[in-house]
Image 1 (cartoon, rainbow, N blue to C red):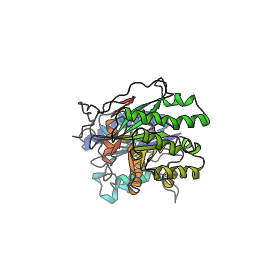
Image 2 (image 1 turned 135 degrees about the horizontal axis):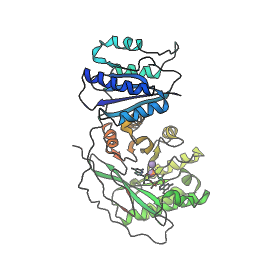
Image 3 (image 1 turned 60 degrees about the vertical axis):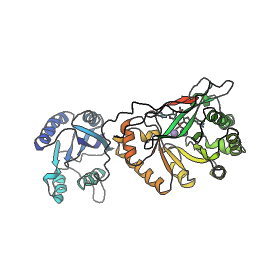
Image 4 (image 1 turned 60 degrees about the horizontal axis):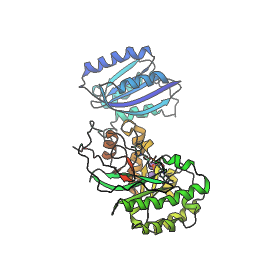
Length: 401
Ligand code: C2E
Ligand code: MN
Ligand code: MN
């Protein structure tokens, strides 16, 4: 099957005409052997390349380029399939956009193309080429920067560690949500663990139906007790709840409020994270519960945004105070145009609605750099701090210099 990959990159070395010619000569022979064709554009700042060929061949060529020191900050723009090649006749043709007066580049390029799009049908590859020629990427381009070291002097967290609780059906691990500009822990998320410290899936696998929802809701009292034991102070505590735990158990909100008060917390410091991992049946019932939560002063967050069943419709219907962008979208964001476009749109949308955005599952310094540059303030992930059973571990702060 004919496959297309488009990417952009920054030269990792200085570029002149001779360099470009050599680059293309060299890659042309390699590409010919595996029957990969396409074009390479350079605008003085970025490379933009279209690769066409069999799926395996373009994937292999792209992987080789990704490791090539002559390319930096590689961002995958498009990966798609097509009935025929757009640049079937030219091996690998190079265009230095600076050699052409603005309006002449596109006709020159089209002359080399075998694009046989039917009149009235737009070709996405051509649209990307036009956008690159028009310089539309300059304004958006975020420099994901060189690799940043994390602050070697880890700051000791002031929270106490609780002793392992006995006789409880479950326990909790805590993971900080951090504000890297102010170097502050802005919340702690309580993540359920089994009596032996095992992960949530193992714990929940032993339960089903009503018993699962009961266990989910009632486990929260141990999370609140843990917050008290570690002397959480004014820090915010985030807990996870299945929507059905709130919908199917009568007086669920009253239960939460009583336990919050009993542990010396106030509703305004407790975030309820609604996971989308389960289809919400009975939106009207859910709406009623959300109203109660908000009326009591609890903070509402949509968890795993972008990964579940109801992302945008949930957002339209129950405007939360926060959303947490799922790790699937955060992971390797600095390398994916699609992820970048989605995150920019989420930020714009949440900005209009005054909703705070948290990026979840940040593992790489480059991911954090990119997210920070587009305006995300709050982060959670192994890069900064891992969950710790019955306590909070140290936070590593990225160096911003
Ligand atoms: P979640 O609410 O999205 O929690 C974040 C999960 O991502 C946690 O896994 C955390 O350990 C993990 N994580 C955090 N940073 C990173 C990172 O940088 N990389 C990677 N790979 N993972 C990271 P955990 O503790 O296994 O929890 C998994 C899920 O279980 C939670 O996802 C949540 O949906 C659910 N869960 C946890 N506690 C509860 C609970 O009390 N009730 C309910 N209903 N669900 C819970
Ligand atoms: Mn969560
Ligand atoms: Mn999540």
